[in-house]
Length: 179
Image (cartoon, rainbow, N blue to C red; front, side, top):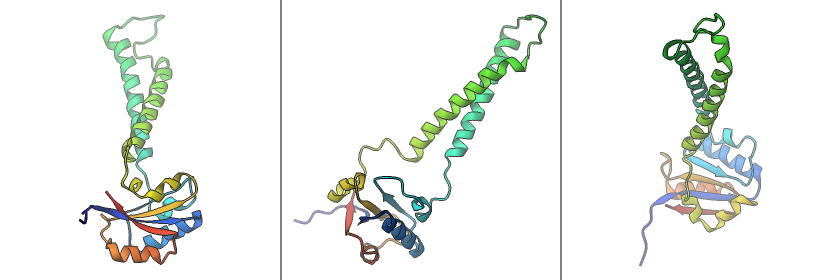
């Protein structure tokens, strides 16, 4: 009895970091865009080789910082000038220099929370199971192996042609990844 499974992609295993970078560059040059690499440590130039040039995290952090600063300033202004105005020492109700420390602290707090939440959302975390975990050799990705996976949702993906392309890169092995 043959079991049917949904194909997630094809993964190639490499023994050297430079091999996976070169493989990613060649795959990108061939027109593959939906691919990812898995390495035991950060590899220089790998993100660029995969075509990842820009991330939204800085924009999310900036937005969080602006929201925190505006919120902090508004909270102090409202409480001191509108909700409970007390004239202390002849100072005006909207004495902005006194608001700077809390405004700054809330800006930093909201920016850091936005950074953490943005990173988790953009990386789709937490993710207790990923389809590449179905490949038995993948457990070595955290110790001494480098993997390049071309996903089946890539417009150029064809199981046989993609497998043949990955074989031409001379990896240690090429496996299909089931979802």
